[in-house]
Amino acid sequence: MAILPPTAANIERARAQLTAGGLVAMPTETVYGLAARAVDSDAVAAIYATKQRPQFNPLICHVADLAMAQAHGVFNPTAQKLAQHFWPGALTLVVPRRADTPICTLVSAGLDTLALRMPSHQVAQQLIAACDSPLAAPSANPSGRLSPTRADHVAAMLPEIDVLEGGACEIGLESTIIGCFDTAPLLLREGGIARHDIEAVLGEKLQELPEHGEATAKRAPGRLARHYAPRASLRLNQSAEAAQRDDCLLIGFGADAPDTAAANLSPTGDLVEAASQLFNVLHRLDDQAMRQGQSLAIMPIPEQGLGAAINDRLRRAAEPA
Ligand code: TXA
Ligand code: MG
Image 1 (tube, rainbow, N blue to C red):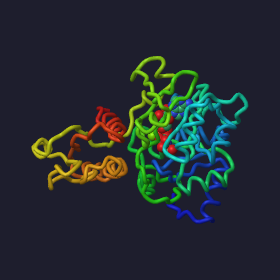
Image 2: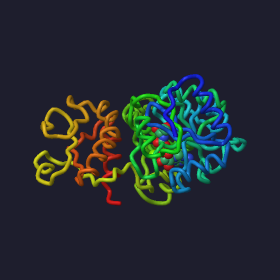
Image 3: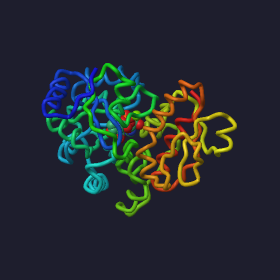
């Protein structure tokens, strides 16, 4: 409906809409989220309907601080350590639900766990504080599409939703998700904080689940959904020559990218910069490719640091529909 500058009056307007059971898109430092009050099961159901999201895929709850998180989830020492070190920021912790949490079970899609994150973006923090309640918020895109990193991406994909303006998302990739249960910590999704940095704080390796299987369906149901896809087809690990031969719009990376590339995620080869540009470049070039009847191609991205999360998104984006 509208892109709203984050004035006190508009934060109040958003709070009133949420309290009345509505949905509002809010900026975070990772990507824009489509928010509802996590205790309001009708509003949470509206998130699933608006995104056309499969109901087996649970939502992240955004909290004001660790105390709010611990009122709803059970934090073991590992979870506490990670929250103390990385919050506010791009880290989501999946922990057991507290038996007495008023957060609706639809948020967890029927699982006995809860995903919690304290975002650092000032507008998200102000909105959560104003609501005095955790906000359930998946990325503000129709299920399977690219995540939004600017308010106008949300407005283009979900035109019926009010969006609080928060500028371009600084990190530009969704949060890293870690499962903290009674076993070793599990890396459930690569994201805006590199695995190495988390392992350095914990002093232990993160465990992983297989891509498919029963444990994965229970612990990382999001892996089963198709994700992050542009409408145009996307080819990975392409050379400049192949892209030119096949008339693809080429997304470059680093100093070796040719001048003919349609974009460069980072001319200096900086993976943090590339992460922050990824979805923005994909949104822009996808529009152009659709207008011109072309495909997209991208040069290889190194698998180090945030490159692992970038390549995770790209592999899913390149899967045929
Ligand atoms: O950075 C982010 O994480 C953004 C911003 C808005 O916070 N949110 C986001 O939400 O990426 P979404 O819905 O696009 O992705 C949430 C992921 C899904 O893969 C979902 O399966 C997983 O979190 N998830 C949520 N609750 C879970 C749970 N209880 N157990 C395992 N995975 C969970
Ligand atoms: Mg998403």
